[in-house]
Image (cartoon, rainbow, N blue to C red):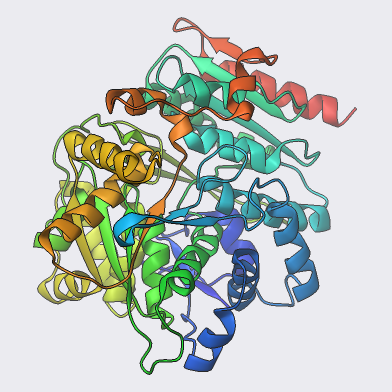
Length: 506
């Protein structure tokens, strides 16, 4: 399996190259040269598989056995899921009135990012051990990315991770999940600034090509193909759990409802659909609705500043990208840094992958469209691309009041607490139920536990349920470095990275 850029001007790479690169050198995103399609008999066989088994089967389609032999691939994935609390890794809650909620949050940090990042960490470790190399990971976060990234690499000798978070802009639980990890390779910085400001020192270090090359800097974010690949398994598992029958021809469709912010998860769903899984996808957004507008009207444009909502991890409108490339003889790296008005995440960039597939992999067209998008801040999708997009995906939006009402209704009906992001998806289910629009089987993806969003639970006039692991955070030792506004943040980071490198070589 080779990987090509969505913009068509970069040479193809193997899985290892895509894993370490993130972006392609031409600014595009790596995608498999071909999307494998699965026949009826394969789907029937897979329908009996557990979630980890599905991840293994899917990964083997996208990672050649020459790079990672199948037995070793299986071992890496088993290691990735060893710390998950649920025996099945994920869990489907079957609730009243046909409400199915796929809980993707049974990892260490109670967020769905643990699933893909735990596997990505194992893949990185595998190749680094073979190459006998060390990497330095820089992450800017104001939410779950930092803690999931930390947990994916904690304690590893050949990786150091530096996480910057803005003071007061993460929830207390999210901050403690980072600062209570006491490991030699984990370095947490709490900066007296906002999300945009914490990106600046990271950008400055990546921009220093010699420094980036010397220390093998890289970033972990949702545009990395490895993370998309693992997330494809969500859809196969959801389908097999919710389909009424695997004996019908053709197989019946299942509707999967996806809380959507940066677009990585819905991209994985569309790839699953392209592989032959009979699913109907619904992207549900909060008041930051760029993907909803693109699906409904072909309007893929920025709409001003990000609107803060209860579903804060989905508060994404834009992603301003700076590419800096550093080359190493042994380790191919394309360094990326992203800034967004609310969160330092991949934002709408993953939509580029969907548009590439919809355009029949026309790299030249995607290059033109994305350059317009980032230059003019607005884009009207070509008629044919928009037609295909609206056929492949449905969408709706949910306000904060919709989120609160869905949380209350789910509790009243089921005594089941939703996080605000999961409630965005469940809002769509209740909307369809009340309007008697469709009775097809449906599954709502739940990206996080309600235990991480106590303020939203209280706003819905519900009583939070806090697991012992999260309660224990308040009594654990913490370690972090404060970056005061008057400090030179980039210099502080640079000095720490160099000091650790010097200590490593003595």
